[in-house]
Image (cartoon, rainbow, N blue to C red; front, side, top):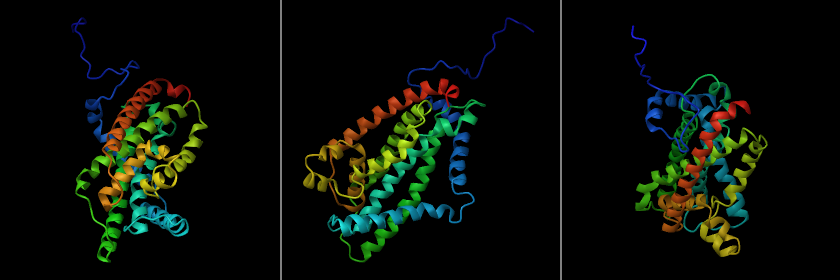
Amino acid sequence: MNTNQKDEWLYTISSKQKLIDFNFKEIWSYRDLLILFVKRDLVTVYKQTILGPLWYLIQPLFTALTFTLIFNKVADIETGTVPNFLFNLAGISIWNYFSSCLSATSDTFKSNAAIFGKVYFPRIIVPLSIIISNLLKFGIQLLIFIIFYIYYYFNGAVIHVNSSVVFFPFIVMLMGLLGLGFGMLISSTVTKYRDLKFLVGFGVQLLMYVSAVMYPLSLMREKLPQIAWVVEYNPLAYIIETARYMLLGTGTFSWFGIFYTIGFTIVIMIFGIIIFNRTEKTFIDTV
């Protein structure tokens, strides 16, 4: 055997990475593992529970009912010709997708430390699997929304689907990417500062109130113009407002809001990938 023969390696695993390393080819080669993680997320969450996947339906329905009673009946927030319950269900369904993605991905390193410390695979696969599995859950909630939409429509409600609804998947994708970007940033920070994890749940709840989930964006501009900028510069508010515009034909559509949200999402994703890649090199020493 010729000892001088140069070996050719399929992969080289090294801690040295580019500043922005999102290797689509490598991720695709691990697609079976990605599917396995998606199945794990769907099965293990509600394993040994009484109602199982029905929780996907119970949570948005009861939340929409609560919002209808408190914000529409007690606080007297008007939703125009759109039924209050349907208005709230549309906002909650799209919001739940973001909050689920953010909450789950923000604990990526800590909850998967045992796996990360034993075997190599692209770490980005774990948060990607969370985004995909939550997309399936969102699909179930969207189906419930469609059922209630049909019910209200045939009962005389003045609602209609806007022609721009063909771009609704793009809006959902923006919501998922925002959750992924923020989640990677937080998960990278949590490895050193554990108390940040306790702030995630609290912060997500506060963020919901400034994201136009339970009220029209125009109402904030009318009632509280002094602090309306807090909502107007929140990209999540534009996503939810646009989603309701597409699904219910209510609210406003803003090109500025769309391009602002796209730019904001790209920036968050870039920073998220950079911090995530830097953290995965040394997180095992601090987690």
